[in-house]
Image 1 (cartoon, rainbow, N blue to C red):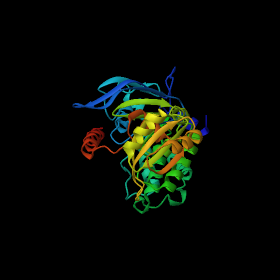
Image 2 (cartoon, helix red, strand yellow; image 1 turned 120 degrees about the vertical axis):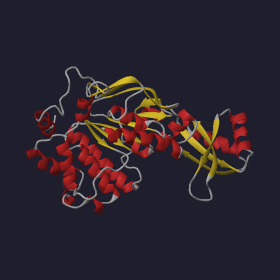
Image 3 (spheres, rainbow, N blue to C red; image 1 turned 135 degrees about the vertical axis):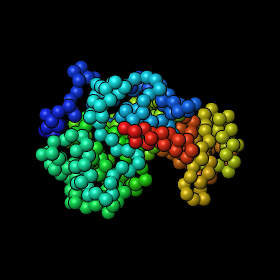
Image 4 (cartoon, helix red, strand yellow; image 1 turned 60 degrees about the vertical axis):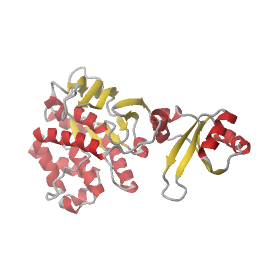
Length: 355
């Protein structure tokens, strides 16, 4: 255990763990309904200590609602869960002292400096005054913001603000850090840099990380992933095992007549096919025939030689998490309607304000 965590435990109940506590998070048939909408529908999972665990799914899948339940911002309609050994329904104060949260919506005060934002957070969590300055320095250095400690947040870029929010979530040395879409809207370079910091933070602070995302490449950073859609968990495993379950290779074929080519492939070769839309931002965008085969190197020459249908282009690649999601749900990651998402998020914001 790191010296930083040891110091946090000495300060009081913030990092204390009940005797006999098992996994960092245990959820059993957890549900949350908004009227007739089942935002979370009987999900069960466990998260080990020091694990990076991810919820992968589209907007509206139930990711943020699940985090809000685990963080005691929403009461579950049914089911139960424990966090750090504490029951989320009957031991809410202990749960809140055990967690750090980086919400999807920004919550920093732009008129305060980075250091002032952190110290205000530390004060709310009863971090001893004598320790606040040292803790702020440590976490700011960890996320690469030490030189900007005395600058107002309004001068920060989007990526810097996300890093500062992560640093703030660590000020009281939580056992579990929740990251709700931590890199949403950021450019790939900034997203990569934030993930470097997250991996360092896990090692330095000996914490469990629970994140939600709809970025496939981001989910690759997780030790395990739960794929969630329409409030239910469709699969849960390591990224490698999930991709291995799809098959050997993915062939994507563009044809002059997609339906005719698809029928011919199924009739002549007995290969199951699917048609999916591809948006590549240029004139080649459109429908593709998708095939899962044991070996693209073996199947593709036979396919091209035996097809009478016009083939415009073809590609072969190994499975990705996007393929896993498509295989499990029959569609790619999608955007939910704004009305549905805004309804859920408004309810969650209202509950936060009452806390």
